[in-house]
Image (cartoon, rainbow, N blue to C red):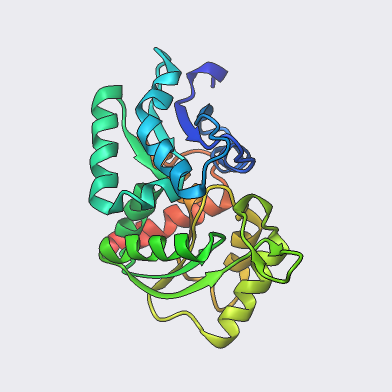
Length: 261
């Protein structure tokens, strides 16, 4: 196949996010080319104001691709779209798609599409966010009609005074695994519940791969913001064919099984 004949995915990403592009490139492999446009920096503002700014400037940031032909685009920032709630999130994505001339989805809408395709109605949420933002996330999924069975908070570490320090970009695979194992020992997944790792900035591929091999989670739906977005992008661009990353292949196979029920 000619290098330049592959579908093109545009990804809008926060300026400090070091995870989205590497994970998208790994997940999509030779299936799509990935091009990015980054939100502007917001020095001196709090987290909530920063996220609100991202939503406000999103049309212009997506417009940063100019006249480049894209087959699809993903807004790789879950947190900002939690603030919109499900209906507002979908409405914004539809408006952006209409203006761009190609399908645009947030990572949150990609997750909802994956849940619908899998027949998933229950989630256990794995979150690297501050507690207040984790609760905003929980409320988003519940307003979307999903039951949140439990929440696993994954802090990046501790502050000098011993409090939990939350930063998705600093969370390690080892810390994710430690918190997940501790949670599952006390709270086995409910029947039909999926594990959802929220946030495009938390690296999850190692944890997802390990969970896919664990006896108690091997058959369960395992989702992350970036995995669901990559699956949605491939489907939007013409189908999940060719050499797929094992996690994408696993998700696609589970969707096929669900569709055949």
